[in-house]
Length: 178
Image 1 (cartoon, rainbow, N blue to C red):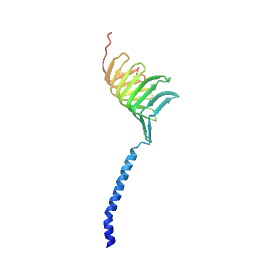
Image 2 (tube, rainbow, N blue to C red; image 1 turned 90 degrees about the vertical axis):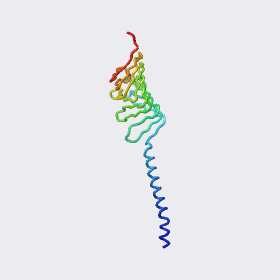
Image 3 (cartoon, rainbow, N blue to C red; image 1 turned 90 degrees about the horizontal axis):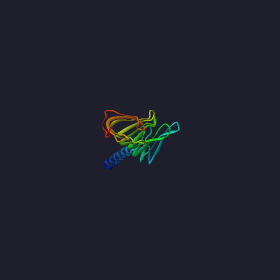
Image 4 (cartoon, rainbow, N blue to C red; image 1 turned 135 degrees about the vertical axis):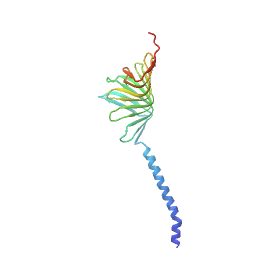
């Protein structure tokens, strides 16, 4: 009778201990799963095409999980180069994703692209297709020319130096007197 009494007394405590351990293990697994495989501070990435630099980028942080695209987070800066390796433009954004298969580049949040020739594009998202050397946005855009003409619209497509551009659904203002 004493053995049954002892077992009855300690069984609830044992059950409580085991259930606490199981819930802790679940929380630990959840936290471990959210940590990226690779985490780098102040990364610098260069993308080349036939030994000619196409893109140099930096950010505050890089996160990379196996079989996922590379994520750049915080103060992303991307310098773009033409087929001759000459600098053409610079991009600023809050974050970006680099697809390692085709080396395409998506920038997100407060995106600003400034060409060396004086064109400025601002939007919330932009995509750089490396194979076609085109930048594309499907968001609202503001585009300012080197002569301070400002155009607004939804949707944008251009070469990387912003010299051959197209705005879909445009509106705008010019201050030139001709």
